[in-house]
Image 1 (cartoon, rainbow, N blue to C red):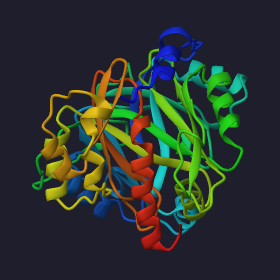
Image 2: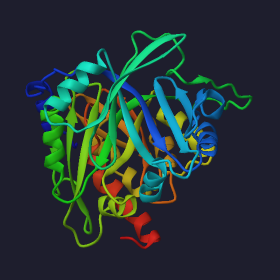
Image 3: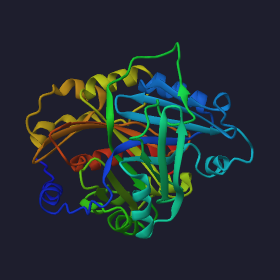
Image 4: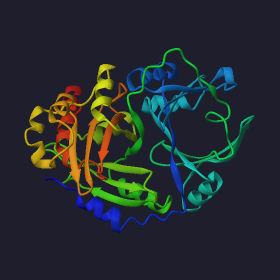
Length: 379
């Protein structure tokens, strides 16, 4: 049976995040996309997100348009430029569709900005009070890896829908949710030799602690490898694994991402569900494509992970992976990239007590990704 004792020891004994920056959770994740209206339709149809809020010409926003979608505690913001001179166009030209903002919910956005910039963060947005008839929100922001930014959102003085400048978005087309609950973790890809730099950034600038690390012995196949360290804030609500490439015989998925994204960025969002079989079934029925895992993965599954509540056959039919640690087990499955460029994808995860990240599945997962890379001619 494969266990991940290292992560649990670190979590129980050595999680010493200096919580000068208390984070209440993920507020929203904003994608810059080429066509926000059509992207919103896709995420509603395929992922079961619901219409929530809108900003654009009709609300007085002249340079961009944004659609906000929700599912349980998850908020996605999809933003496109309205003018040729918008800086959003440069982000799209360089990266294609991708995550620009990981917004963090805080009690005090001014203090969050001061604490992080005093510790060396580069300011993206000085504290700004935004008001409408429903009260006010204070937002501030800092730069992180690549062109990704963190925005701190203080909303205790606001009773409105989302943010000032947004109105309710009503739609006649509202497919049922698929059971996505919240963001479990978000993974960043950085360049060669940059992982420790950004691990130090999250430790020094944001007070995060390292939960676990994986090296190329843990995450490798016959052809490719990577290294990863998982950073977490003090209350454990925010987890950011940071990946960098490692030397291998062929090009790793991290190298492929960096080549096509043209730099560091968010690789995937892991979203939680209480019933992964039901969620994945619904998403497959709506056209979402997932990575393929050979049936041989399931031949000795129970020998590797022990007894589980689920029947093996439904997992096998959908390619759902299983791994165990000392706290329990988890089930996970990864979509194919959601953009034409082989960059951003989603992970669907259901935790049955496990606190780890599926170390026992790395080899099967990487071999599946390599099959896709081979089809793309980028391996």
